[in-house]
Image (cartoon, rainbow over all chains, first blue to last red; front, side, top):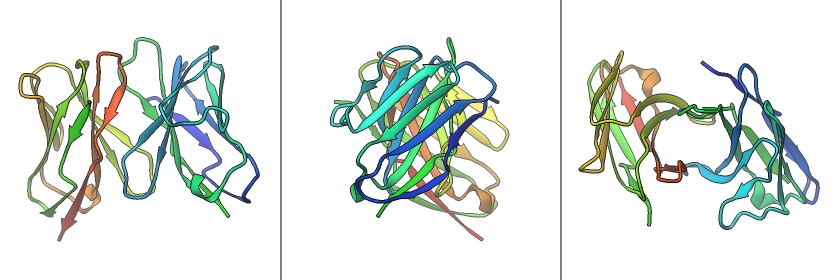
Length: 115
Length: 109
């Protein structure tokens, strides 16, 4: 099956700093990438959908100026959490889908802790 | 609004069979997915149904009835490693995935 990687797997940062998370499709071209957030014991919450070369579409309630998404190539998307606060601590998961594909392939997730 | 319902938690015994139900009300339907998620890990794909009926894949089977807005995931010969959350997700008319809250399955020896 297709492989999606995420980096870093864990990050601890201080309040007010910014953190960048990378999501890469390793063996296929991801025309669409999705960013999710998951709080403990809760389901996945879609934050935004991005198509290669265009601006991301954010879900209602997700601040686009705080969660910057860049999908500059068919194999890489980045999520930058700007001016992170403790309430941003969560499990961030990306997924990727190729053109004419049904299934989304998930990355392993990034656990962000803001102190 | 759009809604996916599945039980919060289920318990089963090693070696037994368990059925996890999912009902959905969405604006349009373009397929239903089941994912497995172990604690602290990302979801992994289990099955995809777009037509009515049963799809079997080893110990796991998934059933869909579009007229009833209903699906189930059947797990046979349960193993301890099957302890995980099972997520039901439906792709709506905009091809957006709508996620259920997940069913935590606890397997006891």
